[in-house]
Image (cartoon, rainbow over all chains, first blue to last red; front, side, top):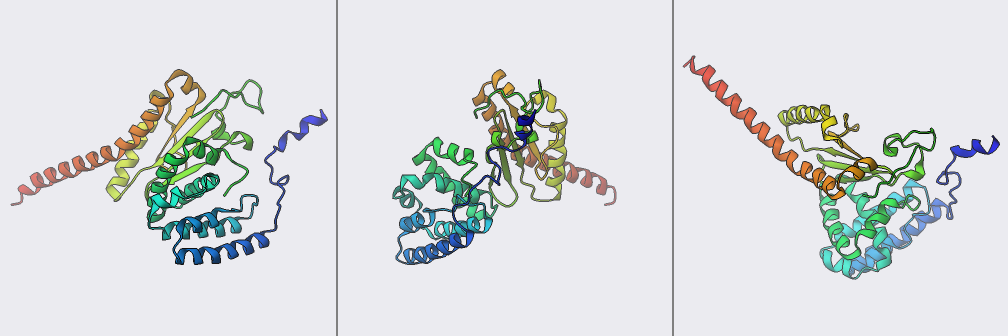
Length: 145
Length: 150
């Protein structure tokens, strides 16, 4: 039958995904954010720097360069932070999910120092945000960070 | 771990673990890779009716490499009696578990999780013990053999 032939394409096809912004625009915005983050790290205001890095994360795009650029920025902030507890206490709760996704990305890198830091942060973020945060990070296949 | 029964969408009357075949994207969750360091990592892939956990154990030198390979191959060959073990590990890993909704129906979920965690904790200890016994035996044999030349 004619309507049975459409069962090949699922709702998650890349073609049906609408990109709201061009990659160049996103990269430019990330560069602007990185200047702001560097300034905040020099003060130093780690929580604000992390919030800036996590805000407007390029989840609505499929371009790997944008995602890599934002990950480098978040990584920079996490490595520069001295006080891990204080960092998470002041963080805006809406950014918990995005941070959890970045932590899993960090755990996948395999670099010992990054993994140690991500594991410590994961434990603290789990205590604060609960198991729902982890579930959203795993099950969200649309907004990949 | 929330697994439910899900008959195959493509083929009638079939019930396959979706994580193995990966035919429909909407049935899969994001795979999670957790690396403790460069040598050890754990990959967790999940779908609506099945969960696959693959572990790469630490292998510091050649001897540990061989021991780990033989020991884990020994376990994988007897996967039938473990039920949740996979006969062949996923490419790039040393051992894999495949847990389906049927396992969750027959066994307690928290016990399944405890089993996997206990396995991960004990495997390093087992391989160290094996290495120690191989070295001890080697030393004893060499001492005895070379004694006849002194």
